[in-house]
Every structure is written in structure tokens, then in C-alpha cells.
Image (spheres, rainbow, N blue to C red):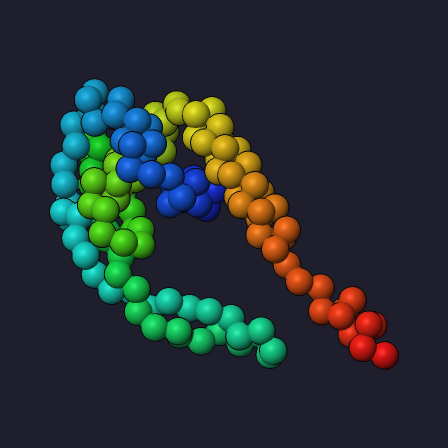
Length: 140
């Protein structure tokens, strides 16, 4: 499983979902905290739509943590200041790096549920869209 997909799913997950995925490893493995979860600022990059150039829109508060799971490092950086979730994400990253992460099915199911929720939200918003093209035709 790609790290990018794991990060995307975990970033959209809530604290309890991340804790459930990390519970097994927090109980059975030796965890050393390299960097305590802490707040910091990160620059937020956006792509301007006309020429497609990247620019920095401003700073955002993030929390970051680094742990070692039986000697293998894992790290997490996430927007906001939910230190517990960030710590759990770092533990999951270390478990993946160590090759002992066996919750892939649960993680993929969580991703499917997130996609379904996002599709429902988008469908609700589409119902409220106004079509200005049809209004232009009436003016003639």
C-alpha cells in the first residue's frame, strides 16, 4: 500500500479511528518517543488556476511527532493540534516501515467509507448549484 494513500486516509480519519488502528502496536511493541507531538507552523502551497504556478497562501498550524517502534522510525505531520492522533499516525507509520502493519483491510475500508461520505456531500452541494447558462438564454 502506498504511503500517500495511507497518509490521505489517516489525515481524514478522526482520532478514534487512528487510535483503533494503532492500538495493537502500542500494546505489543516497544515505543520510544524521538520527538513529542508538538505544534508548529508550515507554509501552505496552492496552485494559481490561470498560469498554474505554485505560491504560498500562508501558514497553517500543524502537529508533528516522531517515534521509534522496536528501533524503526515513524513520523507524522498533520494539520491542527490533535497530538494523540498525530502520535497514533506516527506509530502506524513506524509499523508500516517495520513491515508488521497488518491492518490494511481496515484502513482500505475506512478509505472507502470516507469516499462514500465525500460523494454524498458533493451530491448535496450539486443540488444547490445554479446554472447561469440557462438564465442567459431567457434574457434574449
